[in-house]
Amino acid sequence: MAREEVTAAEIARLANVGRAAVSNWRRRHEDFPRPVGGSPTSPTFDLAEVLAWLEANGRPVVNAPGRHAASGLGLATVVASLLPDRPAVVLDPVCDAGILLAGAARRFGDTAIYVGQDPDRANVEAARKALSEVGVNSAGVVVGSPFLDDALSRYREGADAVVCLPPTRATWPADDAILDLPWAFGPPSQLDPYLAWVQICYAYLKPNGVAVVPVPPAAPVRASGRRVRAEMLRAGALRQVIALPERFAAHLSGSWQIWVLSRPAGRPQYTVRMVDLTRRRPEEVPTDAAGWHTVWADPGTTSEVQAIELLDEDVLLLPARHVEAPVRDVAPEYDKLRASLERLARDLDVKLPALPRGRGPTPQTLISIMDLVRLGAISFVEKGGPVQPGDVVVPAGAERFDAFVVGPDGQRVPGEVLRCDPEVIDPYFLACFLRSETNRRSASGTQGGTFRLDLRRARIPRLPLSEQRQYGEAFRRLTEVTNQIERVSALAADAVQTAVYGLTSGVLAPPRGGRDTPRSR
Image (tube, rainbow, N blue to C red; front, top):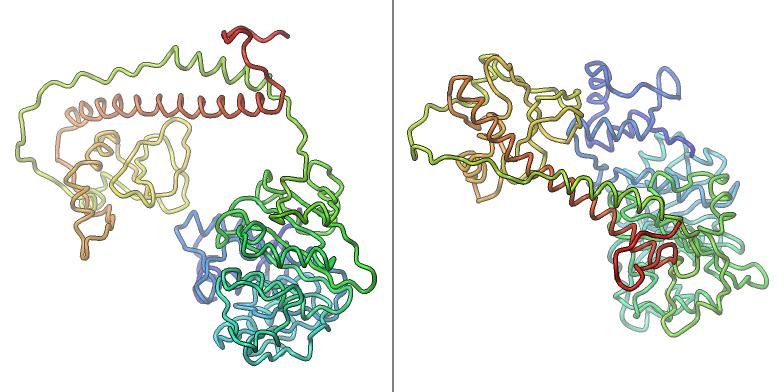
């Protein structure tokens, strides 16, 4: 798959900071991604590396208007890769911050004219900036709306390529004026704003022009939209339905699709290419023509379906119904999982340690984490820095001080990381008391009753190291029980899912006579 590159200005917009902040990150952080292209004065960076760095350093990813866009640029690249070669005009009827137009501009450069409109002037300015940073003329992006004062009306049936990420809402006249709007496939229900935008996009297409429109999960199945879907099929306008992986982009919840439409220049082709990418990882979705040709040639991913086969009572546009995925031979995998689960369950030791009765509530001298940091007993590991066995991690987003100690594998979990001087603080003791009721209540008792975790203000008892280790060992044994059960549970879930797949696909058969007998080999 082609690597997607972003400029420093695009990184600043992703992280909602100024360009100076990105320059500072490059100077101050040795682990900041290195340039992969561009020029010395205008370098470009690998988008995946940038997103990983931002996440590891706890920096939220948003674009200028505030919409989540961690995968917005990836979506724009995928949409652009489905457009026809060498378009003269690329149009977005509601361009928002210009992500899709800029994605097309990164592919075609200044060989095309980019035009768009949005009713929000702030969005128009953001879109112009996005296009200018890619190096193309942005003068064609203006304030307007296809429902009110269409600034792009002269492009009706005149654009080679149209892109659009439909807004979640769209209002149009409910009186006779609705008949004057470009409903080539019939007036849509107010429940289906995306079907209105699909038709708006189609209205701008010239003969043989192509529109690429991401649509939400309801678009292919909602009953209120079946008449519009049927008319698209009868007109030969809908050419491809591409089902994307779950949550393909950060701001797209659920299983979205991409619809590719074309205005027939002659006799329509009444076939629809159904593409099922739901079983793929998001990074496996093609971003160039070669990748799409590979997908279209794979019968386990793509099927050419006659439109008449889709014109039943419900008019469901679901590629998974028409693509036969190759059956995997999971028998060896199931045998391995079954044996591993039996072995792990056999070795499971879920005995909680016996804990004698304590002396009851007794006053203890407490010390804050910040004071321990000042004394050098504890240090904070820089965000994104490597963790090591014995570090204490407080996971990000936890609704309490849900601390745990990093094991031998050194696996990193997003959150704050504390490193103990083992001659002063036992890490298991620290993790145990970070979970205490006192710290939990202190963390949740903020203004307005909302939760706010301030690790530096958490407090633990001042105890000799020998006593710390006694508490720490008890905590380690308690958490090991949970860890063992979680490992068994995860393995059991994998084994059951594999077995269900095998039974329902014919690869596996139920035990003869209802008894658990070994499979014949």
